[in-house]
Length: 213
Ligand code: SF4
Image 1 (cartoon, helix red, strand yellow):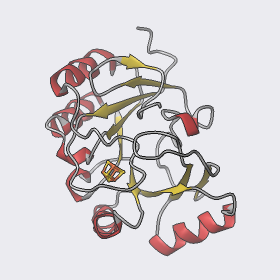
Image 2 (cartoon, protein in one colour; image 1 turned 60 degrees about the vertical axis):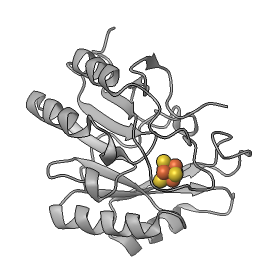
Image 3 (tube, protein in one colour; image 1 turned 30 degrees about the vertical axis):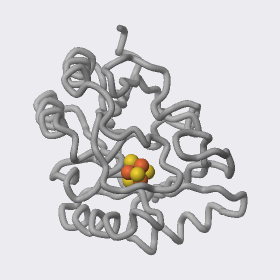
Image 4 (cartoon, helix red, strand yellow; image 1 turned 90 degrees about the horizontal axis):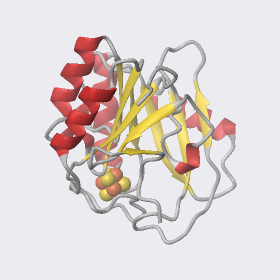
């Protein structure tokens, strides 16, 4: 695999999740092979500038999360985390993306507070199933949570969601280094961000993450 022109390695870890969001795109939480994922990252990460750790559940509950953070830190590779809760917010991350919705709100607010206490930049991630949201709305949401950015993802027809709706919008506060953002690892973000290589929850190289319908 030629990684040299790929800045980001995006990895979907198998992880359980205690929640059941109505539009969850990966309801088969914890499905996959953590050791195969770990092996694939060890093999592929050299040559990348950033490791983007996401999951099919709560990323911090993955059995290999801490080991992967340790490995990437040893290589001097930046680490960003999606589906971040308090468990996966550790010192030194270049960015955490915290999913905020009516199901995750209490967990998300605690995660944002922990990230702020550790000086880790926060991106608030929301699902957008309307065409009403504007860039100004995103900036306001960032202000409300003291966040460095907001990503509003158009709802995809994946997992528990039977419909596709809304547009994808991104806001990044100027002057704050949050690593490579956004990451083109999901269908709604294809073409938006940095070149990316993806590893799925079975340790396979794939074009995109999530659970395509
Ligand atoms: S959307 Fe995220 S937090 Fe909600 S059930 Fe799915 S994996 Fe869990």
